[in-house]
Length: 347
Ligand code: GN1
Ligand code: MG
Image (tube, rainbow, N blue to C red; front, side, top):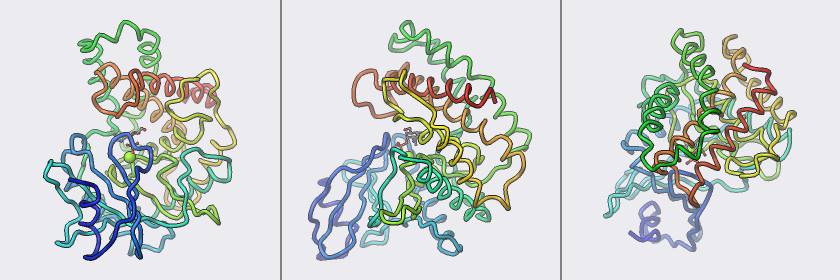
């Protein structure tokens, strides 16, 4: 179905669409900016139903959380889905694709590349406030849309099978990466034990806390909104902090091939921690504070494992822009893991 027709489905009758252009850096969904005449612009998105196999459950979670946050005293905004003329927040087109739309928030920017420590603090404070506002949300009302999303030992087992099967014959050229990934297992086991014992509690987590999923006000630089709520599920806060460190503390994007030039930006790393903790001071358990840095190592390692597994599997999960893209991503995350581990002195 043409994008233009789809966009009109989410707009009042008689609306005029001025232009539609690709938006963002997502690896899973397809996202477009829709400029409208005389009314708020919107974001139109195709939800990848090969990955999110229960699109209705994803929308159910988003809807619940947006409604709940509206009742909370928080500055953080989460854009609620727009409805079609028949009151649906999800539209299935004639090709079987699922579409949804959100209001476009004005006067903001997405800090995909974090520029300095002040910006890092504000991004992290935004996620901390988001978690704080969800502290009393009944987690049992959320559907687990991607079961085992951060069950790294489960991912580890799947990876072992891919290694064994080597379906596209790429293993032989990846000996160094295989060894580097093997060295991450103790972290994955440590996190597993912390979860199993209940030492770190289950909470409502965002699960994709990259720097670019916080919207900052262009004038004040303050965090205005948190977007991309597709992976909202019960989880542990360590992973939300971890994904933030993963995307903000390095001086490179996750697919930069020049890993020799990679550095940990220490001041930014410190501000991510203080910014994230600030809104959570009164509620966080001591163990969560204690293992926050372990959470960062965990998620960088898990992301290396995910990219590398997908490379070995023949690029079946993440969108790639060129052959070998997932291997480049995996190498980048392996390097980040090693730098972070050295910086943090183990875990
Ligand atoms: C995917 O599509 P995007 O960029 O929002 C992925 C995240 C990864 C990320 C790596 C549902 O997110 O978990 O961390 O790529 N989302 C899913 O860039 O797997
Ligand atoms: Mg995402």
